[in-house]
Length: 120
Image (tube, rainbow, N blue to C red):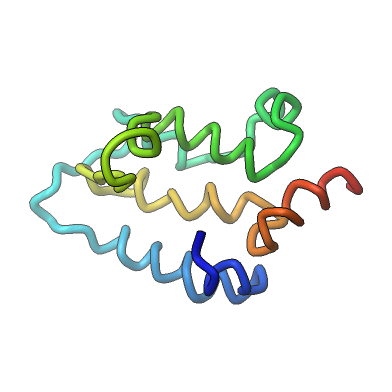
């Protein structure tokens, strides 16, 4: 948990975190192999929260988390240092930010994220 990030509004989170992430992803080292449609990252090109996962989790942020675990694998969260290695570059991985932006309530506190969806 990052207390600084947790206090940001949706717009501030997007401009201060996601826009910087997008900039970094758009400028990954050219030595990384270029990939677009032939990787798990291609899911980011036209990303939407899976309605079945959303129904199962009952929370948009939890649904996004489940989908990201399916793309990046569970090991990043359950073993080691939690760092996800990005070993390819291209439009598909650059579109990762679209997945985060798909969450309407991103930027609210974790407690509010799921409880606010119960009111939707």
